[in-house]
Length: 345
Ligand SMILES: [Zn+2]
Ligand SMILES: [Zn+2]
Image (cartoon, rainbow, N blue to C red; front, side):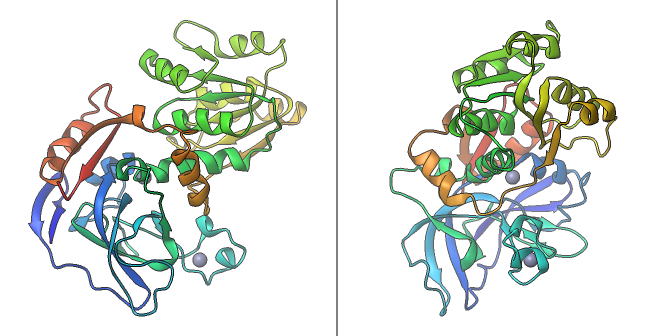
């Protein structure tokens, strides 16, 4: 089969690879669409240490079932499917508690590190275990289904946060995930969602996707503007989708007394934390990582158009053009968001 192989760091080549073998509980999927994730870009040059070559990357995918293992009952040949980016073990302490995103033995598709190598989906075919497969409706295009993983990250973050109907919310950082968080908060019943970002074009997109108020900290004081929009109190909930000291501070200071802050971004491993503000104003802080089985709900939100991903897709192209797109994303070409590769084109 044809695959886009990371031969060495920053070198992607179209290679002929053996088609993966289908185990008893496995499903062979003919890949129709696979998104390039930010984590692929960080792995591509070796900086994250999680894409050790040789490796087929790609974990945001959808396709058609081409073959099933003997024991597979959940799906059949010809089904349109998408699947989780993460393979949980089903055995550990966390899996037993249904906290699969916290699995001690989790493997991510298209990742190789010290502990494992799991080839991913920038290829004509990929093999995945039956338990992470989800059927998708006929009206959902493959390239939208390939966005399920980032959508699920946003929906999971909203679910981690106690939200009551009519709550006001702020989203600090409206990149790919932040723009999906804006929509997930609206879907969860927030009445007013405030988007904060340094890039005006991202704020414009946030507004198109449902944000009620946009703040650019370059021209407006974030906390003051949030307070002005909430009768001086601050918002009920804030989602921090950057992960740096100034944005964590804004998230905390912009939230009302007794409110909730969910931390999704983690750009910096450590930040300065406004301890007294959290303690004396009784804030609750949550961390949110990946997603935990929210896929069926996300497929439904996409199929009903409640969460829109089309405005976030910058390009769809062939596997052959993959290397070029990786370079363009790597150099952070402005305005580029999600690029989807289509191995069957
Ligand atoms: Zn991803
Ligand atoms: Zn586990």
